[in-house]
Length: 179
Image (cartoon, rainbow, N blue to C red; front, side):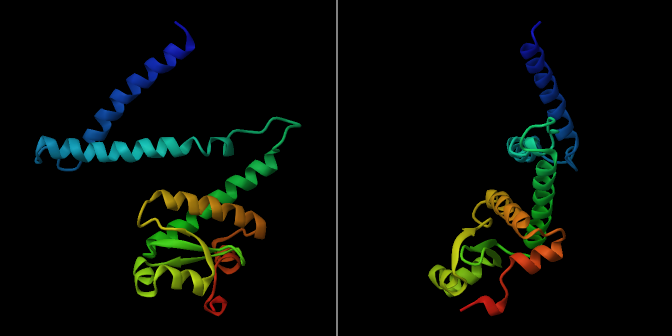
């Protein structure tokens, strides 16, 4: 049997096991209607499918560099560390209740916002006040959390931030930055 066929067979077996584990992880599955259990598991699997898809974007950050090739291991390590730090910062911002991030392309800094702020101030007002050139509205689509973290990771390397405090200090707009 060739390697590709064996790999696919392994994937099919793994999918069966995953379905079993997903159903077994539903709390109260014996007391709820079968359709509710299936619907809950399908939502979980949908999220898992997205996670596997996005994981493909980051595999290169964990594969070791070959000697005398570019990018070198130091570059790969710096990219990985900045991405992990960016994810931590974005997760903290999401947990604080922010609905998105704005990005000032002139000052190269971010500002969290609430969707209500945009409604009260109007999109143009918010953009004008903070000179926002790009928004990452994860309240509309959670995918924007990933895009904001990727954007922030590059900025983290640019300002050589090593901690969340450095990121907040160096990469976020303060009230005095508004016009």
